[in-house]
Image (cartoon, rainbow, N blue to C red; front, side, top):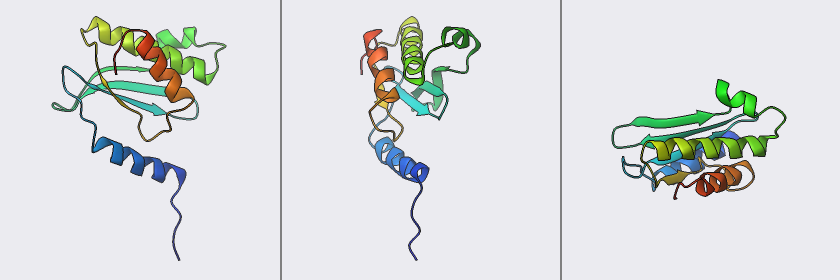
Length: 122
């Protein structure tokens, strides 16, 4: 009997397929995004060294106050804006977007659009 793959297993397969093509460096790091049912996590990663340069999520204490009364899409926009601001402060103006196997729709699109409007190029 053929076992059906779950949604999360399918997402991981898509993510692995994307990661074969996307690679981040110091000058142009990879923006990795993960979306759970409640929260949004984002990182700027240098794949040459295997280091996280910048991170932001909806779980941070500073952001929790800003996110009160906002829905999930609006909170993704806030995280996108914060990660772009932190990247520009460190002198990073361009990046490669890794959507993590998620569909480029909804919260992922809101995050990316807000990061672009805040000055990050990808």
